[in-house]
Image (tube, rainbow, N blue to C red):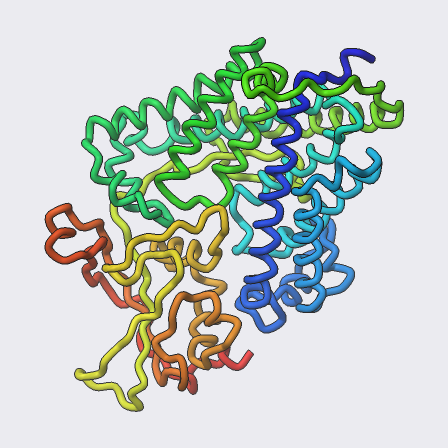
Length: 481
């Protein structure tokens, strides 16, 4: 079937697959390095306890068959090794069937982690990686031209990511409609980056222009992905540029990078190769019949499952970042339907004093990415995902977001649990554990340019309230788990 494949997109597929392998690599490294402290048998939300109450049909995962910390870490490192192999082109050197199995194994491993990841894996980019990874299974390798149906399904996925995000904004916070959301967003976003302070202090008319441009990029441009070339390529390019703007202004794990990768299959690879002076691909044999059958079956499955996300886009009660099936095959996306006007940060503090007095000196625990020390410039961590730092941002929004993990975190810090402390940038008690811990809620704001010049500080903070009163190890039973 000549219509089944198109060699015009060989370069687009190549870059997409290599980039997706890189994202998978980062995701598996995150699991390998943070999983034991967050999800381990002695972690903040242990997987074994989760599996006791969660049936396989609701959360399919290899860990229903067996779980141990060693097995979890082995799965994560296996995923990282396989991702690295695909990143350097191993799939293109293997037979088509073997390449497809390799991508399928990656998807199964990461699905297994996400489905036991609980609050730590409740982010939209987890489902986005799984849905992208599932489609990548059927993209083939250099032994066959890219299948047109899967290329269109990738555009459909990108459309839902962008158009869904645009709709959730227009339907949500009023500041998106009056173009004022970026007066606040750069300061109040979950994890500011090194340029966020500068973005925040851009002139307000430029902030309004940013919001207007965002609406164009998310509500109009995605429709053009389904138009003939070169218009579709131009639309993809606009999406790439807007995503790079987001990369520069904050830390959103691999969300922006994965969205950029999803735009690439919409680019006419033949024309891109001509512009870049790359050789044309050699003539490729017709794909095997079994491959055509598998691609057609996968396409039919995705189209059937697309009913629920499509209905959600049209609904006045649009869901954001929601999976309609436990395999995360076809999902709905969106972010920042509402914008916080102020930034509240939970700061954990400890002391070594045996008896608390008004003169007790409390020392702050410092996290890697979230704001703490007012003189510390925000760091760039994305696409790596600092899961605990993100959840601390949610805790600042409401104590309800900290219900399952904050008390265990305090318990681990009271005994200076090694795995937990590794998640932090610095502990003020590197030797003897603290005698008491407390948490306080602070209002953080970016300093003005004048304050920055005078003090060298990036942030100014004001105490709001007590988040957790002082506790001791003797009063904290969960610290012994």
